[in-house]
Length: 267
Image (spheres, helix red, strand yellow):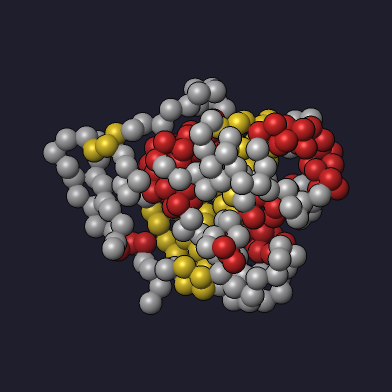
């Protein structure tokens, strides 16, 4: 049975609650389905602010599914738990073709990043059709390859503001794709863990030098999977900095406590 995000049970604590890895804040959450142009049904979830306008939209592209990546990879799950309430940001998560999670399994099979181009296009089209504003691609590991390979070309490029990359390996994305991003002029923020297994800050700075507008941010002590609340929180702060530049400028610190209703994930 597919997980229903409406099944969270919220309660009102008597005092403000520290926001921890498993803290779920209020949002309007719904299971969604994306349809690709080659006929696949992709499963996902959209988390929207409970009230008020949507300030920005994150279209998340998950890590490599053959190595455990899926829409629930922890940074994206925490983004969906927190950012609608803390920053008014909509978070769209979905499983690329052939990928499964508690939400369900998307049609198709893993295609080494080639067929997944249509998955990226379907996700962006969904966000556009829903009228979600200020749309950004957020890629993590394999997801950065998809963002780099397909985010600066049509039909995606004209529908997104830019991209944020978490732990880019630069395995599938080539100099051609970096040149496309350079020509697009679209913002590209690159978060690189100091202890990454594939690409560390010094080399990332050199390779992303092909994109003049790219900003490479090295994160001391972090690893490829951003394990640890300290590092997940840093990623979310950096994302908000980028997509909402008028909301306090560089150095955003999202609240670490919440005074409203909270829930915890199901076991």
